[in-house]
Length: 265
Image (cartoon, rainbow, N blue to C red; front, side, top):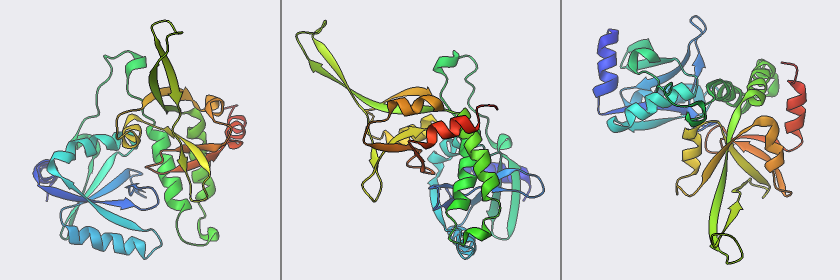
């Protein structure tokens, strides 16, 4: 297969299968040792993605195949830009072809929009967060995770630099004592872990926020990392970044510690 054939298949075929990391609930990402491309994998046949997933699961990297229908392709390809992915490895039978993401699709162009109206994205945080969580949650002894400190350093630096979408629910209630007869009440959503501890969700981009806001009843406010502690409830243990993605928990006391750690950069 040449690249033109692959590009056509990636637009026209009825279904495709993508390996997802169970550690992150996101596409499995690998940094190619030769090109340093940050790549994901796409398979034409379900049986082939199952073989691929089984091989990595045997290495203590649990994967699962996720099926996409043709009408979902474009949204999926476009979402890869928000993850920092720049390459795709396509496999059909015994043949494998790598291509740049930009050869397949162009990123959305928001250059005509004012800065404050452009959708938030943090591709470097998403990318380094995915690599970190893929390694952190590998079911092997910590001694085998030799590159974990380096991955954590990169992720943490991007964590502090990033801006986040903070969700809230605004309810309007009748109140004759208020001008206009309406009073706004703000509720902050939270999630609980298996121990019943409360964490407040924040999101790296609009796609992650929309996963959480399925009922379309939340609003988002953009905040810098160093301001997140100010919105935490008293009973909250901290924040959780992308709870339906890589699900990174940051304890309340870690927020100022991270800020101090990287304040000179």
